[in-house]
Length: 161
Image 1: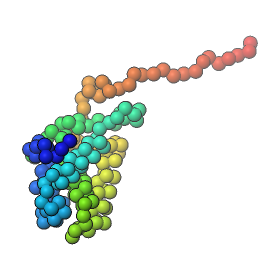
Image 2 (image 1 turned 90 degrees about the vertical axis):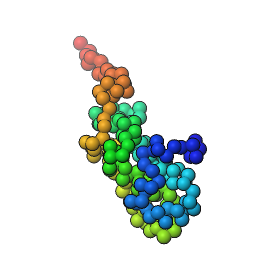
Image 3 (image 1 turned 180 degrees about the vertical axis):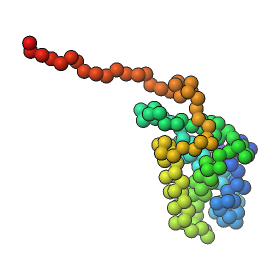
Image 4 (image 1 turned 120 degrees about the vertical axis):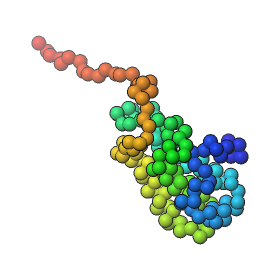
């Protein structure tokens, strides 16, 4: 997918919103004014966060943990966006940008914050943390993904009588 085709208006966050995690002059210096680099980092961060919130076909995802409505989360705009998810995406976006260069940025601090964001998302995905403000899938949508039940047991005890 070419990033030049990505519409900025349809994105969860914009390049300008990264100002809370990286100074504008740093962003311009690293990307050399190429907006597509920032958009690529934002898209990568969004996909990374989506991957933590989206279940898969493993049996462990059907253990009763909350299944978030990922489409609803990332279709939200403006003040309707979840502030914690937004902050995590900004941090991860910054990390993807910082990977290009270390100009005037403390690499260890960026790495530490990235690791903390990933740790948080892992806990959220495992169900150790829940965000009550995130939309969850309805029972009908969850039921469509449930595997068929299976039977288990053993044979009757054999007796030599």
